[in-house]
Length: 263
Image (cartoon, rainbow, N blue to C red):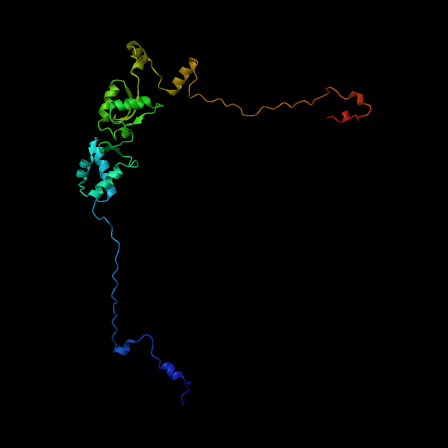
């Protein structure tokens, strides 16, 4: 007699949820591909090189910097090869916007030009700017070159006329910074004074130069510093007040005397 419990046969005969490969004669079942739904991916609105509106603004600024003059809208649009009326209106709005700080727009005749960091484009404007500023700060040539193509040649002419002072790079002698100068303050030094000045022999050895200065009563910069004591001075103690004018003398017999308790 079988030892299996009732219902065990039914449990053993239950089909497996995952059919085995033996039921199909050893062959694997092919996977049925479900057709994918038609998915629409977002595409960029503009895929052409340089067709973005702000890319055209960058090209415009570079073109105006190279031209260094007023250009009409037609000349700019022809350079950019833009014929779409909508794009032209968008660019004109950007050109005339105050936020576009590198483009100077003339509303009278709809022309535009490059706006540098300093509104200086010639020698007269440079002198006027340097004379009107409150400080004696110099202007870097790299900032002036941004809106002034032949700035180096014009600066050299101003320097020869003693109208500006120029700091140059010692390596290649190129101008780096320019300041305003007053030619009336330039005085010619007598040749006899120059000769006497160059005849003065400065000692080469530091010790010899120090001794020479000390011999004529001058203190050399290499002399040792005098150490000043920072110890605070002793403060004198304030003496206790003694005596003084006595009051209420008519009540001496009534009041108690505490004068013996004074320190």
